[in-house]
Amino acid sequence: MAAARVAVHGAGSVGCFIGGCWQAAGIDVTFIGRPNFVEDIANHGLTLSDSNGWEAHLDKVDYRTEPTGLADADIIALTVKSAATADAAREIAKHGRKGALVISFQNGISNVDVLKRELGDRFQVARGMVQYNVAFLGEGRFHKGVAGHLYTENLPETQALAQRIGDGPAALKLSDDMLGIAWGKLLINLNNAVAALSGRTLLDELSQRDYRRVVAASQREGLRLLKRAGIEPAKIGGVAPSLLPFIIGSPDWLFRNVFLAKWKIDAKARSSMNDDLIARRRTEVDYLNGELVALANRMGTDAPINRRIVELVRLAEKGVDPWGPATLRREVLGR
Ligand SMILES: NC(=O)C1=CN([C@@H]2O[C@H](COP(=O)(O)OP(=O)(O)OC[C@H]3O[C@@H](n4cnc5c(N)ncnc54)[C@H](OP(=O)(O)O)[C@@H]3O)[C@@H](O)[C@H]2O)C=CC1
Ligand SMILES: CC(C)(CO)C(=O)C(=O)O
Image 1 (cartoon, helix red, strand yellow):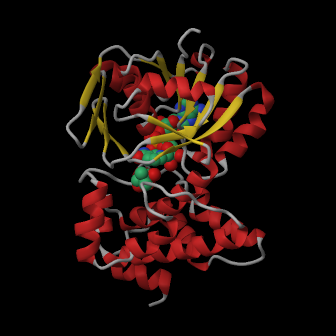
Image 2 (tube, helix red, strand yellow; image 1 turned 120 degrees about the vertical axis):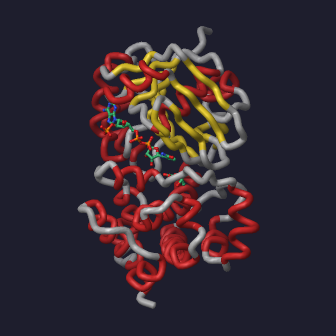
Image 3 (cartoon, rainbow, N blue to C red; image 1 turned 30 degrees about the vertical axis):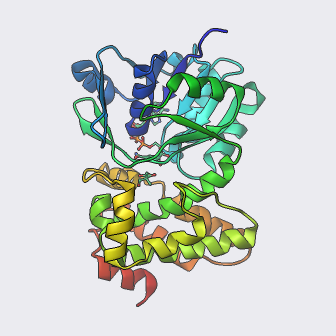
């Protein structure tokens, strides 16, 4: 059987990193994205790095802006932000090859439903998850700034792909519980909104207990809702979801020395929602905290903490100044 060809659709931070690492591992990758990256990568090539000092450079990169580049792909890694999923899916439906496997490496829960609705049964759709942060540093450089792996469903196609990728920094792990993993990741991603509202890097934001108290409260609310809905979030990075609020809300000395040390967060790492605010784009808050608000509404109840966070991010999208730790805590928690 011929080796699968991959297209990355929406090649920005995550797409360039994972596609670049896979190409460095010998896989045939086409990148589809925006003109700014075409120019940047044409001038500088693609350089991938991680916090352990690993680095790879690719001189020849097939980066295009036209979705016609999807036509030859057996596997399409979708890495657009959530609000762009429906448009990207229509491009896949138009240009992709019948039977291709589309893996959503996006945060949130509902992207896979949008893909299935738009793609029908001409394509296979799989859930994926990116555990780590990727920062675009300019000049074709993409840096993995938090420890972790990529995950996707355990299928014959993904088994073959994972084997070819091997153990590098964009290694692909397979799971039979990707929905549980997506909910587990969503609980972690509740930090994105607080990091974005803080206007700080992940390390700087997480070093402030008042910010962490807000995240912990939103996670507690999320856990209560998931329990009531009968949804079981999976462990991410070996931490049981029920422990997340205790870890995040723990005193500074414990959090810094035990947890921050373990997660190896790079000083440059920013949440992807900070990137959106900086670029003045609509954020993914509706697909993260907003997913919990929608779940609460479906069950005839409310999620006041996550609802308030969504409102504050909406204001931040309009250009409101970042929040200090104590001010944000009082605003969201009322104490
Ligand atoms: N960045 C990170 O560290 C992490 C991100 N994630 C998740 O991964 C997903 C991708 O995030 P990220 O890589 O940061 O996003 P980026 O915005 O960096 O990259 C997405 C790119 O896709 C482009 N794009 C959108 N629609 C199309 C289209 N139809 N055709 C071609 N290109 C398109 C966007 O352009 P434009 O801006 O013009 O729309 C953008 O350049 C998100 O769901 C995010 O939550 C998960 C873990 C970590
Ligand atoms: C890896 C993590 C949790 C970093 O914040 C992320 O998913 C993101 O930035 O969207």
